[in-house]
Image: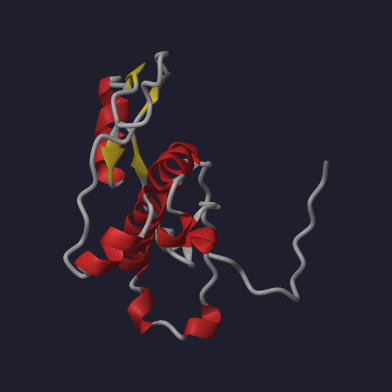
Length: 144
C-alpha cells in the first residue's frame, strides 16, 4: 500500500497525551507499570460486579482528580466521564492548549464502554422511582 502526502494540507502534530488505565493513572505511572511487567487483571471487586458470579478483568482502582474539577461536577459525572476528563486534562496540560487558538485544536479520544455496570446500578437504584433519575442521565450514559 502506498500513501502519498497531500502537500496542500497542513501537518498534524500530537502535542499532548493522557493515559488512565488499570495499571496507572498518568503517563509516568503507566510506563513504569509496563516496564516492571505489572498487571491489574483479577476478580473485579467494585460494587455492582459480583451478582452471583465473578467477573474477571482489569479495574481502575481509584482516580486522583485535579483540584480544578468542582466537587459538584465530580458528583454528577459518571465514572467513565471522570476517567475521560482526567485523561483529557493530562493531555491538555502537556500540550499547553490554554495558549492555543481554539479553532486550531482537534481532539481524538479513545475508550471503551465502561458504563454497563453503572447502567445496571442506576436501573436497580431507581427501578421504583424513575422520576428521580436526572434528565441529563441519557447524555452521560455512553462514554465514547
